[in-house]
Image (cartoon, rainbow, N blue to C red; front, side, top):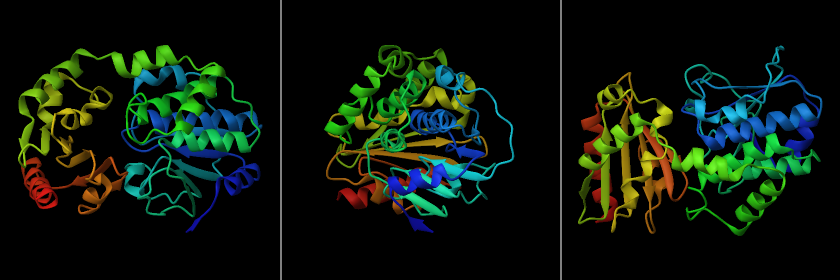
Length: 313
């Protein structure tokens, strides 16, 4: 298990064909954008390539995925993109050891045979730089995929992870043909009726504690089932708790169909979201992290609140 640079990644990819790219479970814009931008680039180099995921890709990303025709081949090389730990590969691929991991999470566990970690605002920034190194022309398909990841992982450029380089890359992608206005509309301004129902529950059930410095939202699976909400309907709901005035530690717990719980943590300074989540076997970034629990949602809530009180006291 070794760490390598983007230049080394470029050299490795030039030597391989029949490449499988794995997105993380509950796929979001950054993992999908990373995977498909890399797919389009590798196919542009004459290589066979496919994208796979344990979970179904949300339909709203069809403007990216529909541009990739199906290719059948025997897999010779596997890459994971935007995946910080093996369990995040999902049940279909969680026993796979990728030949290469390209990620931007500083908490990456180095589960791949070789790993390239660069702490960028989005993993799509890393893929953008990789494509540049490989001297592949960025066409509209690649630009749309990369812009999607950059925009979604920065909250449409509102999060503190944004740098001047983020804006420079976004500007170049727009110049290359990224349909930024439509992508922003689909990603940030469009909500399903199911999402509105879950949001109504969320606003009624956010619990504020620790003298107003922390907030926790627990969403039982039954609420999502009653609203007929798909995982993609819940994207971005994790940020609600952090938007409350005075809250510097926001926690969202989402109960899964199998009874397990996925936790998303969003913070403001000085709280480190990644450090908080590491207490429960998770990780992430300074302002955004995640972890999981196999206990009941109420038990998870109690454990998280206790740790939050300890951190904030």
